[in-house]
Amino acid sequence: MPFGRKIFSAMFARKAPYFKTIKPLITELKPNFCQLTFKKRKAVQNHIGTVHAIAVCNGMEMAMGAVAEASIPKHLRWLPKGMNVQYLAKTDSDVTIEATSSESTWKPGDQPISVEAKRSDGTVVAAGHITIYVSEKPNR
Image 1 (cartoon, rainbow, N blue to C red):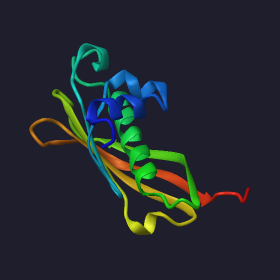
Image 2: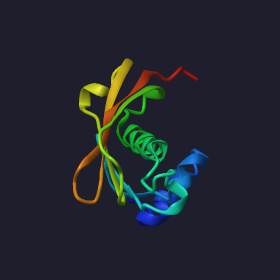
Image 3: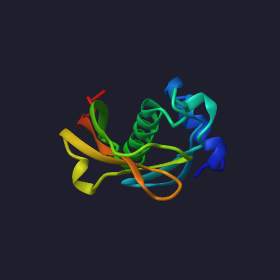
Image 4: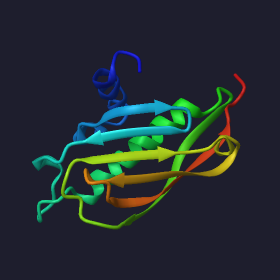
């Protein structure tokens, strides 16, 4: 990753200010795959002391955006369109999030990107998909 993981992650998080709230670290990024982590800390906890579901979704959206930017062909563009996430278990530790797409994702139309969040023990705490709308860039 350019500039190392911490600096790259901080620069990427500036694209949407709410990404910074979870202090994410992108640990792996390649076409069609992104993995990021963030620590369980007071700022991302809910009233029962677990990581807030929306903090997890925030990480999922960032991972999806990184996958899209790393994967989409130059003649296409994308916009997020919707998110469908199931909360499966309490998030009582640091979080690892993975976003995965495939080569078939990168064609015009509504396309899903799979997202999954895990606790430190490997338990999946949330899973789903984020739909993006892919279209041709206009001629300029």
